[in-house]
Image (tube, rainbow, N blue to C red; front, side):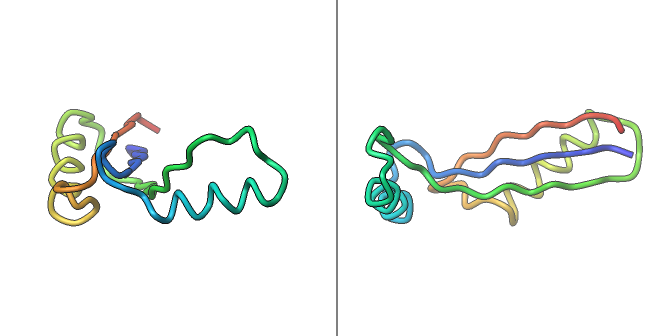
Length: 82
């Protein structure tokens, strides 16, 4: 089995209104030291097989086709054998 973790986040030049709202809420709750919040998504996958390179190629395709909007988002893949 292969364990995959994918983090999807907005590209740095894309505004993040949800992150801004969370940042304001944190300040209201008494955390003024927080200067910026960016909101993203994470996906944890378990895949059959043992070929990490082949699995990475498949996950990149998944990200490009469904998991991320590559126009405004970037993704980071962590992959390991279980």
